[in-house]
Length: 190
Image (cartoon, rainbow, N blue to C red; front, side, top):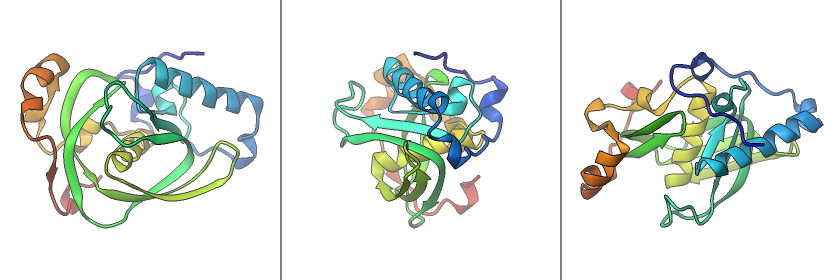
């Protein structure tokens, strides 16, 4: 079932999501939630979706990039379920690049993110996941896990002057070099 996506201003986006009890992962209702999240992500042409974005304050996110119309040049990311994820930077190297969000429609902005992160989580069947995500994959993981902590990409932007409506972003911003290495972000971390 395709679910309604919460938009900026809805309090569910600003709350810290609750952990999922591991014994609940196999429940029919929880498994249906995972299916609905994937279907909703695909319907809205997203590359990730966090449960708070569909009005469910649980620490769950899904992500996938496979022949995506908005990101055809990106390396594929297999369909991944992240339950109770913990994300830690591999090092302090960051890259500033453009982001948008299903909960902040029609806008794009430059956001610094760690280039590489280690992800520990439970998967769809409660299996333990432990992997390193880099580049765009790392960006998507960080974006979605921010939602689990009550944050949106706007909170990470160093300079709101890059914030653009989608139409103007296509006209003007895409003509500029998109990504810049920015070094350490200790002062900008939240």
